[in-house]
Image (cartoon, rainbow over all chains, first blue to last red; front, top):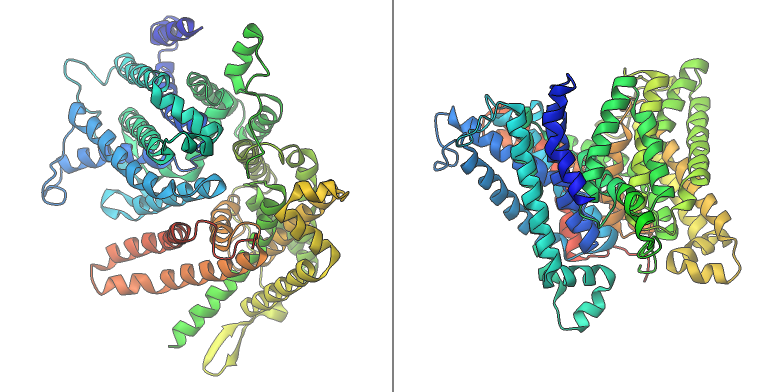
Length: 329
Length: 304
């Protein structure tokens, strides 16, 4: 399964030009980038049981770090008097990851003092704050957003080549998934899953859940920040739209559509949702009137999303873990 | 001074509108444990139906009735078709399904009415202003909203606090399993509560029409603010919703009215306006985050 999936992703930009549709490579890049963001969200939602409704804030923040650094390149004075602009990927991208990780540290440290629906809403509130902040930053385009003159420079690679850029994004996704897999297999992952199942028991075992949850929040935020940096490069544009709460909703949709708590499922979810948007969008202007009910049906009648559909029949453990909802209010 | 009083009234009026929305949302969450993102869509449906009926008949009363009825029917329909299957599911499923409903309602409304905003007129009888506080003329229509909202709030409070249905509702927010075990037809109660909430959202939408423009997507910003209200007030609590709504209404209106002016004395005009606008949009979220950190269950939680 996994190998087939990876092979498809690897072959995609080679196959599309052969089919006479080289312009679809960019669509694939978009899918891969959103897949990265969705996987990072799945770390939180699927493994930690922490439903964040503000994940797009980190996506947008990562994008804005890249955008602002590129903007500063043409500006007269360094930002805050000390930060010069850059269009080097090896500076801008780690900067984006670092900034979003720091933001996630602060937001997570505060938000994790609540739980349940309050956590959903407080993450939303923080995301809204950042959204309105970007809207009000007139220097960086405010409502209209900020255009990048060119993509960040990668040593030895041509980022303007769509296929090259696709592989760079794919590499980021693979590294992040591998990292997440490694972490989830370790003690950290066991504790995180334990917290999702029953936080009180984890505490009773002498483990303080707060630190683990915060670490997961920071890791997820950093992943989304990287995705945001890539997205800003792909479209050469960032705008407050990236931080809008509907974007957070979209990321949640990808996770759930693909299969929550499956790590690979959200990749499927991102691919499926973007595909659905593109296909329905080409078909009718009013594609959302179809997408909406599709989402409702998916929620009502499937468990573990697309990934569940693909794997459960074969393994025959469909019922396992199918229902852990309710019961804890 | 005059400006401050006027803005205070505006804040109260906005708070009352928020309360109409928050009352339904907080009861639905408190009793059924359902996060309904589509609540804003019901508000939008109320506004559109009212504007359409008003344009056809020219009567404000009929428009108001049309808006309320349309929202209540839409609420009844989605409760029956979709939401009742979600009460036992976790919050994530609810968020996703109701997000799907938002997409559907927004796009369906676009197909019916187009992307251009509709404009509903202030009814002639409620046009003009009145000087009910000497020296401060205030639009009659906004005053009427304030009164209607206050009246509805009082009625709702009476309903919840004094009647048998209200008793069941309160019992539901405390322990719905026990309520079911005592032989109450919980499904019927759920449907009734949800429809009541939809009706109030429709009323808010219908009344908002002449003040704000009626357009697709009008439900979402107000939905988020309504969530802020119920979180601040304490989920499931009507008194909390009232307190939260007034607080959010006042804070939002006051910062919007006075912050840009304050900033203008410190920095260049255009930047002050942009930053002021941004910061005043942020104010309610800062308020909510602060209150949650101080009292994680809200100001007036439903359970004791």
